[in-house]
Length: 247
Ligand code: ATP
Ligand code: ATP
Ligand code: MG
Ligand code: MG
Ligand code: MG
Image (cartoon, rainbow, N blue to C red; front, side, top):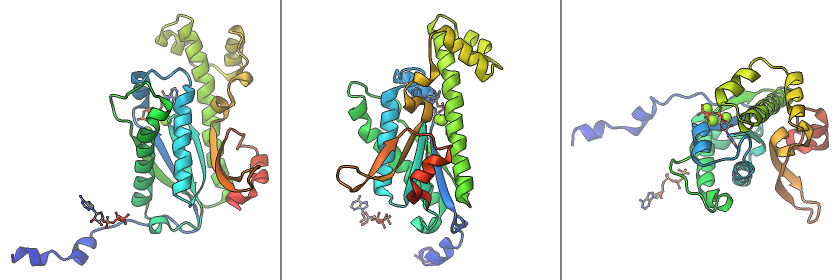
């Protein structure tokens, strides 16, 4: 009874130490599936791109934009999604651990909730989960550079994976496919695709461009709604056509 009186909340709170994310900067929270290489294999995802798995990721991202109004843009590829919070955001007083944990746990919860909608005949054995990190970008130019980096990564990985799985499906072992692609440049990959009669630019645009999620006016109703598009976000034209996103 004597000890319990010493437990003063103020005293215990004084040990908490966390700097807030810098004011007036764009906060990016990037989440990424943990061990999705294995998760994809366990659940028989199509290679190199399982369309339904990407649609599930996109649907979760739409829910996040609907639930956290401070998220103004999101970009997703593979098992990752980057969420951009407006620079004036005061969500959780800009405390990173709360922002990241809330986004990561809501995304994971949505992924599990929506799984049946996208994979009605599959039940996962291992729970899907994600990690997350936060990064501040001080200008819209640098933020756009960040998003361009993710989209370039999407292109490079998709080009590599498309070649890799063509070789594997044509009878090579994974190791052989890896060895024959080692050090190849875009030109050589395009030649390989040509040998298989594949026109890279004819592949589904979601695989090549990734997915962008943002608020836009619905053409029919005129209401704002969250949309998913597969567009080039490296060129400035997208940002000029949607000036409201980054003001
Ligand atoms: P970590 O836990 O370090 O993130 P990881 O296994 O998740 O490890 P990543 O680098 O994140 O590794 O790569 C994600 C993996 O999941 C890749 O192998 C990618 O091909 C696969 N993957 C993700 N989404 C899909 C999809 N929609 N269709 C097919 N494969 C996918
Ligand atoms: P915040 O998002 O700020 O955490 P909150 O609504 O979650 O808001 P808390 O201070 O975390 O607020 O309080 C949790 C609330 O949930 C309380 O109202 C508490 O009574 C209720 N609650 C939690 N667990 C149980 C439980 N097992 N049975 C009944 N009520 C519960
Ligand atoms: Mg990771
Ligand atoms: Mg991953
Ligand atoms: Mg990843």
